[in-house]
Amino acid sequence: MAARHPGALACVLLLVPPLAGASDADLLAFGEKGYVTSYLDNDLFGGTDRNYTNGVRFSWISENRELDEVGPVQRRLRRLTGDPESAKLFRRVTGFDDPSAINYNTGLSLTQLMFTPEDLTDPEQPVGQRRYAGWLGLGFSLHAKDDEILNSVEFILGITGEPSLAQESQNLIHDLRNFDKFAGWQAQIPTEVTADLSFVQKRRADFLPERRLGFRVDGLTEWGVRLGSFRTSANVGGFFRIGLNLPPDFSDPRLSANAYSHRYFDDGGGYDGPWSVYGLFGATGRAVAFDATLDGPLFEDFDTGNNREPWVGEVFVGFGVRYRIAELSYVHTWRTREYSEQQDDYADFGSLALRIRI
Image (cartoon, rainbow, N blue to C red; front, side, top):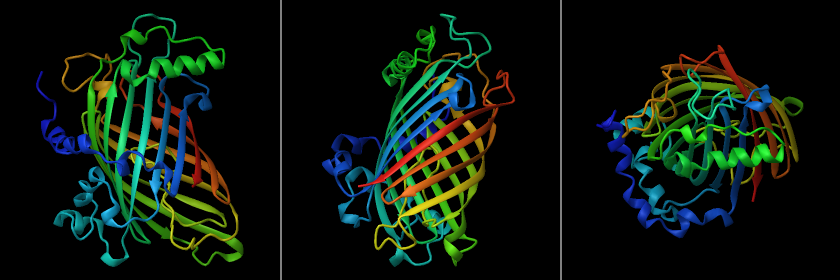
């Protein structure tokens, strides 16, 4: 079977060879200073157990680094960050006004996504329901930022099917909580290695920067593009935060392709006191050209029984608390249909995130 979008795949495959020469700086950097973040998405927060049913992500991002300290995999991503060594198009789009003010961070991530139908008792794939699917991905990222703009580029090497360990992960949780197990995992999408390249730009805006009595209002706008054999899509959105002692940052409140904790590592500027509390709300729109969990593997003729929706929207609200080096947040998301056979007009799920500075 021919590739369904070979141009996108060619872009990401150019980055595969450096993985063979990944250094200790790429793979074993978790002992360095930075932020460790764990994300958990689950639809049980919305009282269901179907469709996008669970997502887990562990991410680590370094403190500010010099470019000669960047590992070889992330170094290959530099020309897409919008810095002075980037391609001219990226420099025009991303808008860094002062190249000397750019700081760099490197990141690593491990993500697992899980999708199931509603009927857990059928040993075969239930007709008209979401196809069983699992995906496991390892990400290498480079981030360039100043006080107002963050550009994040991540290369993600993953795998679908049984090696994603989605069935084992779900069975473990269902055993611990004494839930019935899903009986049809043998019908999940086949095994295929995936390679994806993701770019996200975020821009900060302070709406109440004077921080009267510790009160602050800020927001982030975001747009991004993902090309690859697991997912090809584009998105635009943003969110507002309202809180007390709110530190300025670019952190992701939810699990996403570039979900990291982005803070200032120099002098701790903007941290008013040892604690923070805040609320947030936002929205995102996404155009989806390919999704392996709904379209089937890129290089195999496999019918998932689902017809992907090309446009997906979502709104979300949440809150968070911070005390010194730790922060905990919860966000609830309502997402429109992702495939035409989906019975509900929307799906909802909750996202927990725990961030710790090390």
